Amino acid sequence: MKIEDLNTKEKNTWCPGCLNNIIERATKKALADLINKKIIKRKNVVIVTDIGCSSKVYDYFNLNGYYSLHGRALPPMLGLRIANPKLTVIGFAGDGGTYNEGVSHLIHNARYNADMSLIVSNNQVFALTTGQKTATSEKGFKGSSTPLGVKNIPLNPIKLVLSAGATFVARGCPLEFGHLTKLIEKAILHKGFSFIDVLQPCLSFHNTTSFLRNHIYKLDSQRNLSDLNQAFQKAEEWNYDYRENSKIAIGVFYEVEKPTFKDKWPQLKKPWYTVQRKINWLNIVKEFR
Ligand SMILES: Cc1ncc(C[n+]2csc(CCOP(=O)(O)OP(=O)(O)O)c2C)c(N)n1
Ligand code: SF4
Image (tube, rainbow, N blue to C red; front, side):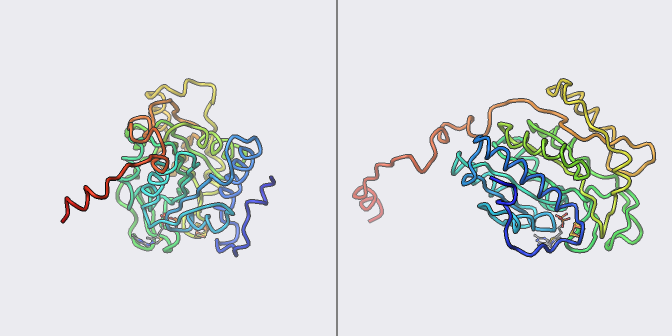
């Protein structure tokens, strides 16, 4: 299968050059590789999206999918995962949806550890609605809702998800295509909840392209990925701000294997649709007469 086989005929409505194009392409490459190696099946892949520029990505995937509400990609992802364990569930969302409106879903899904992947296009702004601040906008950011500049320090999503107990925590950047592709592949292969915060410059409302190009560096993938303290130290190196001495790590911060959502519930050992229920209709009718 070629990457192009995953394309659709939908008109691309992102701004010219939007880096969501690269995230889309990296995901398609990761999926095509895994499908060609027969590790996953194309018919079992489900793309779930939030609402926003990032979430328009589903229009361009010739795959099964589900459009959810703003901030609400994770609940249907979990539902799909519970309903059919054969599925490879991949979610796409923006930072506004994930770290503002739907932040409780992020925290609890990191705790539940269902086997699914969330890819967040973190452009530090509500992009589709033209540039309002989000939880990850840097202090001082002047957006359409904050002409005087943001007064609070940003939420660090890597630290948040590590504290909530996620078992795969990574950061990527579309300026590093090959590296991002590998991260997405690893996230899909990880057994449990995998989370990638993707630093995605928004060319129209938060263009950080040249800063990221000069300040990102790749984490050593040979280090001990199950060392939580070290993961926190790496996460604390950068707090989504734009100082000249910033060092912005990309790569896997933390990866461990722990029981997944399905392993914790005996009812989920067998897919629900294979369970044969013996129903005594006569007794039911008697009860409600
Ligand atoms: C519940 C709800 N609140 C607000 C909106 C309006 N809305 C649509 S897209 C959007 C911004 C999306 O920003 P983000 O999630 O960061 O994604 P991006 O567009 O940056 O990729 C907002 C506020 C909505 N559709 N639904
Ligand atoms: S507004 Fe930003 S995120 Fe949205 S399509 Fe344009 S460049 Fe991409």
